[in-house]
Image 1: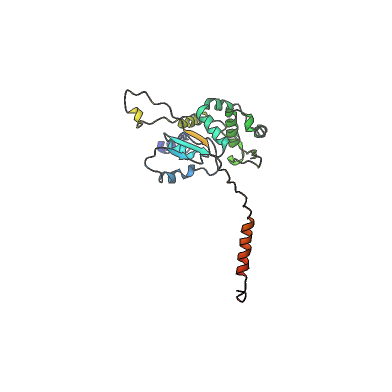
Image 2: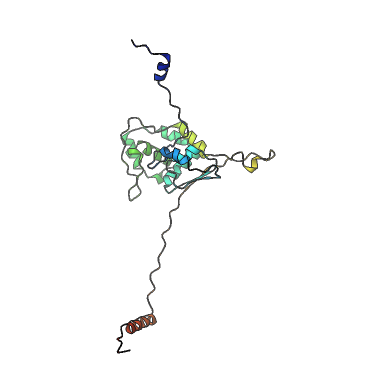
Length: 236
């Protein structure tokens, strides 16, 4: 039997991977998680507020954990999910724990219209379909119905209570110690300032007014100019 030295045996012993929470609770196409080292080199040393116009999975936001932030996205279901994680994370965890991982349940939940659900149920539906759907895609048809097929995963992580609570804490950012209201000992402690989460408004198309038909005088001037330009030198 081969005997290993204590140092080698210690290196071969399986270790528990320590996660740096919070992590994005959604899989999102175009996520910035792999680009964080490059993005950090481009960030300013100081920032008053963090703005994210296309939050998606929020990889950079959860990595930085800014004190003041404003998150936006044109996907209203995504915004409702972020708000539920921020405000009612325990209720959301309860909904996710009750959902089984099965193809039948996936398609039954996919066929439910989000408008027929409560905000918490809508968020749980969003996370469940994202974690169990094909490649974590978010795709809708022309009618706005989610149409991603079932993903073939052996044991996907549908509910991660530890990470969801960490994400909720990051979305409930507090005022930092450099806030003016905290400099005086007599002033009351500052209130909690939650992260602003709003849907991006779609730009309204500009209405083009129909062209104004030319008046009779305009026609006479136009026809007269054509006659003058087409006249021969002898006629002049």
